[in-house]
Length: 282
Ligand SMILES: CCC/C=C/C(=O)SCCNC(=O)CCNC(=O)[C@H](O)C(C)(C)COP(=O)([O-])OP(=O)([O-])OC[C@H]1O[C@@H](n2cnc3c(N)ncnc32)[C@H](O)[C@@H]1OP(=O)([O-])[O-]
Ligand SMILES: NC(=O)C1=CN([C@@H]2O[C@H](COP(=O)(O)OP(=O)(O)OC[C@H]3O[C@@H](n4cnc5c(N)ncnc54)[C@H](OP(=O)(O)O)[C@@H]3O)[C@@H](O)[C@H]2O)C=CC1
Image (tube, rainbow, N blue to C red; front, side, top):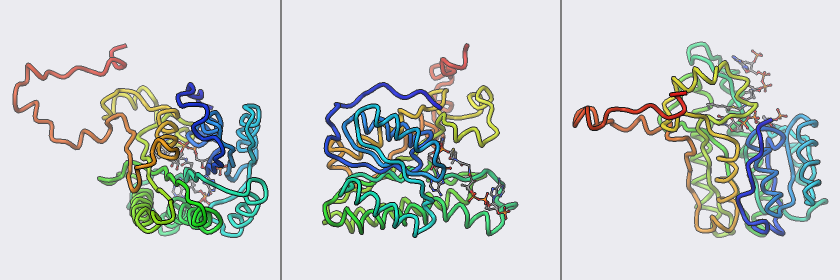
């Protein structure tokens, strides 16, 4: 488990709000669920495995907030419907949805079969749509709310991840469309696109952190932490973000800046001689 961030928002920022965080038992979802509770929200923690979501809900209850853990696969409409009924029963309303659950595997596109492509589309695009539609139908079309999707930095593609690039690009287009259509119902929708963030989810990938720091092109020279992402999600979900909708925020330590043309080499090689990020000098 990654260390939780220090409290950075006012403790009453989300008072009287009910939040649902998918994939809330681990990584960025867990950090977001717990930090939302510290801001006064009651929280529904959703994921497939019972143990991590129960554990997160227990921590939230110890903070003095109400929390329920609901074991649900976001790909299965029947399970989602049951989750909505349980939320209605327990809380009567839902103000915030964080569509964070997701995942994929790394593979060259030429080795990916149709089933693998569809698996990742179902988990990341269709799962997010099903959660969003259910929450709108059961709660938010009635009283408004905020929806944040956790996506990935795919605006220039993502080699080795063609399935997730397609899924996350689809989520972005869906989010922007709904932000327009559902503004009249008081629903704001936004995306947060993490760069490379240190979570237990990253253990699924064959990355040595030292090697990663040398190869990765983010200009900070280190991975992000779960609090970098939860802070953006909470800003967008709360009244702090009340004038923001249809946006995608890249929280990536400048990882995608390398796409910019680096004109320094052409202008004055001495003046702009490159310094390594401090973390690499150690
Ligand atoms: C974006 C950049 C950085 C991102 C970082 C993070 O997101 S970190 C945090 C994110 N966390 C994570 O990413 C968590 C880790 N990821 C996962 O749990 C899974 O990858 C999953 C959620 C996508 C699917 O899970 P599932 O249980 O529903 O699926 P299943 O296992 O039953 O497979 C169905 C089909 O998919 C195919 N296929 C599947 N795996 C591979 C593979 N390695 N190789 C090749 N193909 C693979 C295969 O066709 C298989 O069918 P088969 O051949 O078996 O008949
Ligand atoms: N870490 C990173 O650098 C990056 C992460 N992301 C994305 O950010 C999100 C959070 O990732 P992170 O915290 O790193 O990783 P984790 O693997 O810790 O989080 C993913 C969570 O989603 C849940 N989940 C996955 N599939 C489903 C499903 N079908 N139904 C319900 N829950 C599901 C998992 O729980 P369970 O298995 O119990 O269901 C798990 O708690 C993911 O969408 C990830 O792809 C994007 C870019 C970079």
